Picture 1 (cartoon, rainbow, N blue to C red):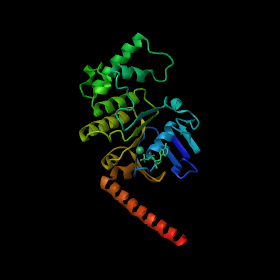
Picture 2 (picture 1 turned 90 degrees about the vertical axis):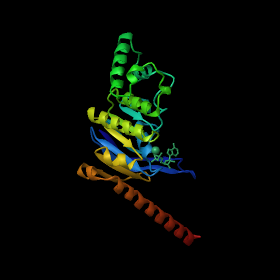
Picture 3 (picture 1 turned 60 degrees about the vertical axis):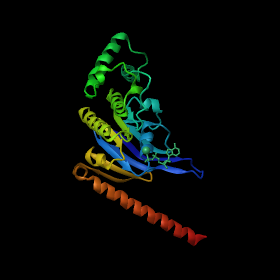
Length: 270
Ligand SMILES: Nc1ncnc2c1ncn2[C@@H]1O[C@H](COP(=O)(O)OP(=O)(O)O)[C@@H](O)[C@H]1O
Ligand SMILES: [Mg+2]
């Protein structure tokens, strides 16, 4: 389904600000697999998703999506196969447009012409049906500007729009992180339902160890631009949030050791 082979990306190469965002990442994601991605800040989670979405060209490696080599495809071309939801509820929707208008735009994505009136009516009816399933009472507010809704309501709608065309791959980047706990819970449950119902392949970045333990059928942990840890099947089912936190602690200890070791070496060489 999705395949990354030795994918590397360095930012600001050759300058003092050089960062190795991805270091030879190999990853295969099967059809209808819900893969959760965790890792410390700056470990390369967003860079991984951006590389897949084609936000920038990668330096090395190959990316295949749905059997096609998309390594050199521009972002807009990959967008026909990929649905994305970001952390910020303001990304992904047009605040001044109504719910109905935002869905009409989403339905039009990848089409050369606008929607005819008959299609528009169908889209509106389908929008109402989909929005009703959220149980947020939004089906009666289709003409309300999206910008006036709460973050949770917006993320729920963004998720519906991102999955509306049944994308080959769904990319979620901490899409519940900016929400209050109750809304975050609603949106993650909706996410889980949609992925299961449509049998989508999904990569979900989360900072919540509870979410990482509870959701998905596979879990990968990134560290310094590499995949450090990768579990699925029964092992994934049994994993607990506490265990993940312990792994982070362990990493932090190793990092400190590393820094100490580097300093000692530096002193030896002056
Ligand atoms: N466009 C960019 N230009 C320069 N550095 C970047 C860019 N995007 C990410 N980085 C750097 O790459 C590293 C990984 O970032 P990122 O993938 O955003 O981490 P996270 O795991 O927190 O999502 C960080 O050091 C970050 O500063
Ligand atoms: Mg990130």
